[in-house]
Length: 123
Image (cartoon, rainbow, N blue to C red; front, side):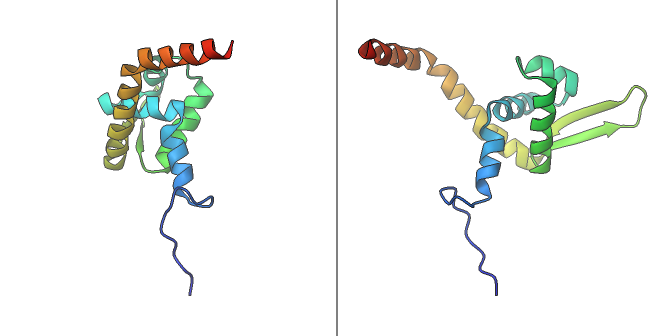
């Protein structure tokens, strides 16, 4: 009989680590937060998430789709149209990472001050 291990993110072989990496990567957070607002076409999403390359956006969307967070809806029209939106599971995780991203934005001045203090002490 095979023993089923309870997920534990601190365990090196825990599958939750890969999921955590997908949703907390720079592009994962930004894509999830954007899709929390509405669905996007690929090119719209690329413009919305400043600085992401086409390759990185495609990889991020594939990972999030594979994990069940993003729905890829390809419409059989000419020219091809593909829309990306959140699944119910994606809505849940996007709400969490969006809160974290918003908190980070609100703390930028404090972190920059801490950086300057740290750097000044090292000179």
